[in-house]
Amino acid sequence: MNRINPIIANTSMTLNLVSGKEKAQEVLHCIILLRNTCERMMNCQKDLNLCSIDYAKAFDRVNREKLMEVLVKAGIPSHERRLVCEILWNQSAKVKLTTGTTEDIMIQRGVRQGYILSPSLFNLYSEYLLQEAISETSGILINGVNIHNIRYADDTVILAESEEQLQAMLDSIVDKCKEYGMEIKAKKTKTMHIGRDTKTLTITVGNAVLEQVSKYSYLGQMITEDVATLKKVQIRIEKTRQKFWENKELLRRNVGLNTKKRILPCYIFSVFNYGCEAWAYSKTVQKKMQTFEIWHYRRLLKVPWTEKKTNKEIIKMADVGERLLQQLMKRKRRYAGHIMRGSSGPSL
Image (cartoon, rainbow, N blue to C red):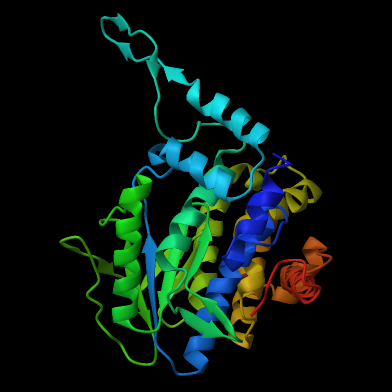
């Protein structure tokens, strides 16, 4: 894996796959790249049309003969290809029926489930699919960089300024999918228009018209038509509160306050913090975060509203060190330094 992954990274044409860092950083880079692209287009008063592609059984539909061709094109050494071939080709399964178990059935397509190299192989496979389909098309031009897709594994978003461009790109991908044995699931593939004015898109896959949405979740982060951070923060707050009530053990009196304070950032605030580096910290958002943090400490301390304790008194009672907002701002600055050093690939 350590020998093949650098070669796969060098063949990548999309910005999100060139970081070479751990998976968490790659996911975060995709989220920030998509958000920054949306914001840039809004600020320049240009239209941005997105299509979030959903492949039907993506990992299970990989054509193995085509995958071997891709490995050759990518420059994977022959001995590494033989190893991958042995692992994929010598794969069988049994089906358990009410009357018993069948004989071994050879699995003739797809990448092996649970195989540590499968995500990287699929990345390379889908990379060449997109490269052959849309590499010559004009997507979104920002700082001299042409961005036509943002992708992490099988989570793919294609971008275009006009509806006609988006339809042409999607048609090209659909045609190329047939050659690669892949299929786009029309029911789960969504479109979105981001711009100053509302616009109805009519994008089709075959005879099916794709659903246009005002928001959708990309890698766990909500993308909205107005690119507003406040809505994203509100969604994270709702998910975090749900997680808090799922862990009611925190409220038991026999659990010490210090223990509760250690559990809170590990199991509760970690849900809220996901993707915080991509947020814009306006005064409204900061106030929302501070209120959200106090809400948790009031319940840990079991302070009823009838006591009318101020937020400062609650923080003092809980003996809170570094506030949640300070931690999030520190993470954002750390990631900004990560980008400035160029250790996360090209930046916008």
